[in-house]
Image (cartoon, rainbow, N blue to C red; front, side, top):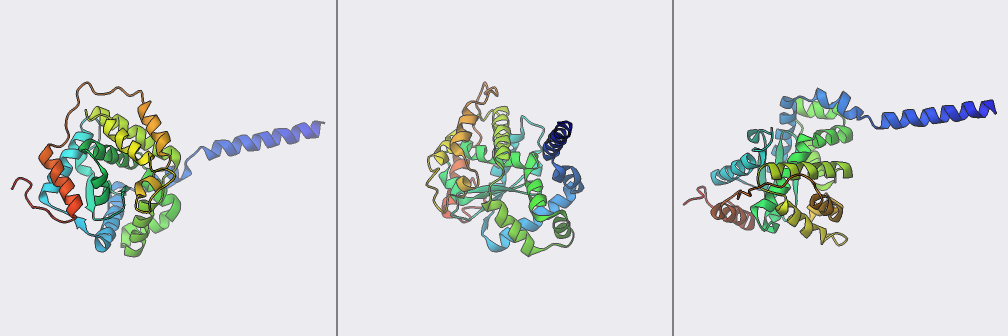
Amino acid sequence: MKAMLQFAAIVILFIATWFGFSRIDFVRIFHLNSINKKMERKIGDAIIDAIESGNDVIKSDSLDIIYNKIMSRLCSGTILNSDEIKLHLVKSDQINAYALPGNNIVINTRLIEKCDSASELCGIIAHETGHLELHHVMKRIIGETGISVITSMATNGNSVIAARIAKHLSTKAFERDQEREADAFAVKCLNAANIGKSGFENFMLKMAKTDGAIPDKLEWVSTHPDSKERVANIRSSKITSPKKYIQVLNDTEWAYLKKCAIQKQLVNSNLWK
């Protein structure tokens, strides 16, 4: 009887110890802090170079003005630095947006086509910004690729590895808890910026209607699963809504951005010509 009790105690102790260690994010503790901002920027630059070498990236001075306006508003009620977050518009039929190391966010033209307002787009950008600020991107890359590979790429550069990472981040889902955390971050960010969560909720509701029958080109749904559950979480958020809603882009700016996405080419170097 005594032996059985001792055995049971050992089993319980083992389970408790295992559970405790399983709650510790060793990847973040031992490796994430070893990647400084300068190294992360190099990794991000390498991935962006790989994307630009294999895709059409739409650029113009007017788009830069619009990007700055969006990010300045999104970051206005937070401690985020809008100058550090870079947006990239990529010609693609995939309805998708994804975060990359070095505070880069890629937005596919088809996703902007699907947005009915600038506030919907801001919701997506706020969500991807959440992945960056919560270190989801680097934790995922280090966990799946390995610290030695990442360090090597940051030091020496490797276009093949960079392209593979870009493909992986654009097509694979984050963990469910990470998606919830990014959504919560987005709602808080949107409300603090006086944009509100309604645009984000509207876009998510549109995506939720496709769950269970996801077209090949609807990447944002396949990489951001459980849309219906997430809509419910966004609706039930207890974060205080803004007392005053402020338009992010004026009609001319939004029309220009939509035109860039639809035509998938440089529309005009000057928005106001």
